[in-house]
Length: 152
Image 1: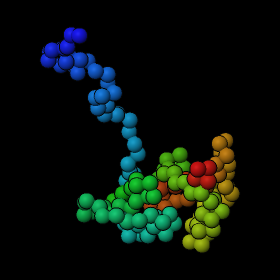
Image 2: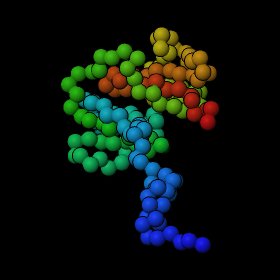
Image 3: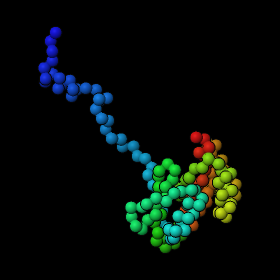
Image 4: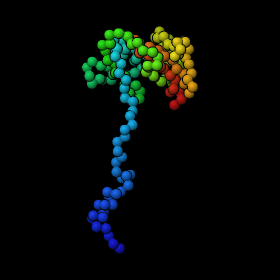
């Protein structure tokens, strides 16, 4: 039986299947954070913490405050906005919950106005069966709240 020499072994190693070599890095992106420019950072942090149970985490920059969602993404609160936001509902942040009824009770307890996309005071059901409502934060940013988590 003939044995392979060192050069043949080296050529076999270089031509080995890709499974033995590390995969190239992926170019697929993952959602990381949203940054909003606000008039009063303390007021905005209080709003998002009270309504959505977000946890504040240390921000690596002194001017910002960061709030973490349960999945690890963050909301960056940047102070210094001189006037309210003037955007429609199609420009919004969407947050998912598991129980729309409980969320509406929380909003009502905090006296936060909510409505569907057409301005009616009733949750609407999307074509995929998910209910949604919209609220505005203290600076006027629209937030869609939906119950997509009930389906997980």
